[in-house]
Every structure is written in C-alpha cells, then in structure tokens.
Image 1: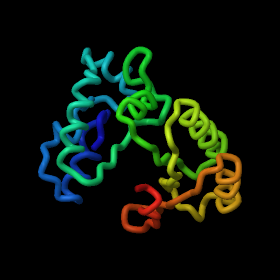
Image 2: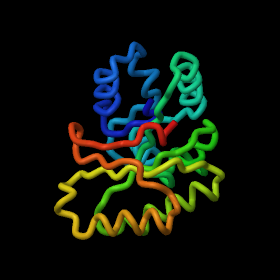
Image 3: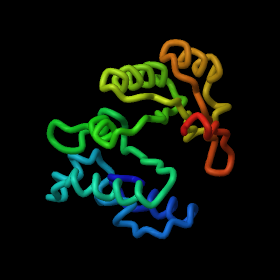
Image 4: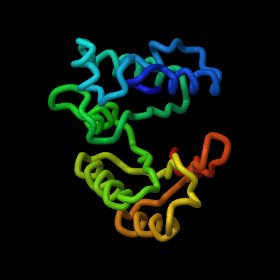
Length: 176
C-alpha cells in the first residue's frame, strides 16, 4: 500500500503488477496527487483535500484481506500530510512498526539517526534500515564505514541494501 503518492501512480502501478495484486489502484493508493511535491503542498497546489480517514479505511480493507502488508511512506517521516499531521503521525495512527529507507549519500548519517530518534520519540518501533542506492554504491566513498556508523549510533540494524530493482539483499524476516 502507498497511502499517498505524489507525481503519478507509477510506484503503485509497479507494485500492483509485480505482486499480482487484485485490489484496485484506488485501494492500494487512496490519495494520488499529480505534482511531485510533499503531500501538503501538492494538495494545496491542486486544491485537493487529503482525507486521512480514507487512508485508514483502505488500510483496514487491505489488512483484512492479506496476511502481510507493507505500507510505503512518502518523502520521509517528517513530511507534512495535512496541517499538524506528519507521515510519522500516520504510521503511529495505523499502529505500524517502521523499516526506515535511507540513501547512502553524504548527509545520510545525520538524517538517518535523526529519523530513527524521531520515530522512537513518537513511540514507533524501528525494525531496521534499508539503504536504497539511487546511484552506484561503489561511487559512495567509505559506504561500509558510513553504514557501521549508522548502526552504532542509531542502534538499529541495516537489514538490506537495494542496489537496483534487480540487485538487492534484504533480511525479510527482520521486517516481520
């Protein structure tokens, strides 16, 4: 499930096809915004009202029909959805643990540790971190040391590295 997608339905359509899901796009992705912006800004630009209850209803429907459900965020844990309501608030309201996805680039130590600490402050269990490599991992200097530093200071295991859609290693059991 991708509760909110901005910039089209490509992510949801890809997941639906790859996982052979029977639900319609509107259930898998109840809020779709055209502009690739944070949800609150995209909604304002498009004069669209984001309905949090619609998201929760879709989540419950999917939860009833599936043994496992992965819910993908949008933009980060502190991205605003509506006034006074962040992505982390949605995670908390849906009573979900979190697998944080981070990039390996410069600055990732800081933003990953801050994100983990923020989630913990909100009472959200962080089950692990997945590094999503938009660029070639080999082009990132000292990435192994960076990952060790994140694990040490965040006290969370890096459970996966995605080099591209066909080359990845994820400890799925750590997500359950």
